[in-house]
Length: 449
Ligand code: NAD
Image 1 (cartoon, protein in one colour):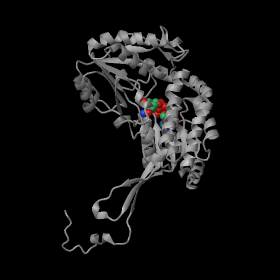
Image 2 (spheres, protein in one colour):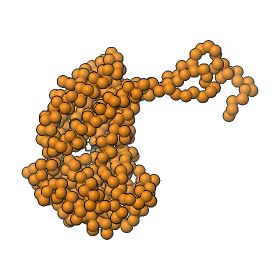
Image 3 (tube, rainbow, N blue to C red):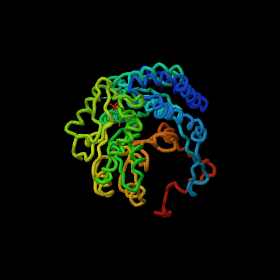
């Protein structure tokens, strides 16, 4: 690992990565890598997670390509030094803020969107002029191998190193000195990364998970809400960090919603979702077992069938779930949707506010008072009205968590900022010596304090 980071640092120190043309060339190469290898990428993601090709485009390659295009369009402006205004007593002087690359950064990816969540941060790191170690998740092994093969063939191989492996490889990497660590994954491993980073005082971005709630009331078209909730929930068979984790609603709305959720599943995936080419797989038998155990003692309104052969779990809804059950204690990360009954929007807000800050919150309500209640009464990485998960595809929006769901954010200009140091540059001419008024002896000079 030492040799890998030393070689990268040497390359960074040549200064080659600072130029705009180098940065643009890397981004274009990354884009070519995605378009020229679309078929292989689809096959790798099908092998790892049973992802349908359309889902690969919508949630993996498409998001990275849109990040690249947005960055190519705006990079010149983001790189430009920004003038800062000075207080009058500083005159004459000039000040600017000059974004500078951080140096050698480490990007650690998870298995659920193994391409997007590794490469979207890399877009920001390269755009900001850094060199990087990328560590794909060993659990999505086909995608990991493909990234390790392709990246050095497209982007500057002296600027990007792929290190494959699991916790041991990551532990070894974390002993090295980086200028920034960008981690996407679970909260427990996020803590391990933050602890390791503290030893070398390395800044970290932590993109973690959590239970993202949905609130629904009767002011909206429940059939559309049901379709959107199920779409967000069943993307990648529920293994999505911003998937709706559970629904909060009144018993009356729940009674109307459950058949609509079931109809939405049938519309999107047919009567037998497991047979649909669009319905994904659970990543490993171990993860399937974990989901299965969450269903212990539960009586699903529909779904609940486990297919070990294809590592699938049918879309499952559990109505009137017990808020103290294991289902409601950990992030579900699979196609199980509990509905917890509350008697008012206030009770839903209190329910959310009493728990760790989620990565996202989704509200389906046309009432301005209710919408405002959620806006001011809760905290979450993101707040969407009317659609889950879609904020991830908007490069102009910062993507990240708050509290337990993470720290820092990225996408678009926020990625550029994450991987840059905003260096203030103050420039005061020596003549005239207008700073003289600040020199001692102070005597009885008014300080204004
Ligand atoms: P994970 O934390 O198990 O693994 C993430 C990465 O850390 C992998 O590369 C893995 O190899 C490495 N790792 C695992 N154990 C380690 C250890 N002991 N020491 C050092 N490194 C270790 O996460 P995961 O299971 O791949 O992903 C699922 C989690 O990630 C969920 O909680 C989900 O919500 C979260 N997630 C968050 C986002 C986001 O953008 N905020 C996106 C996707 C997933």
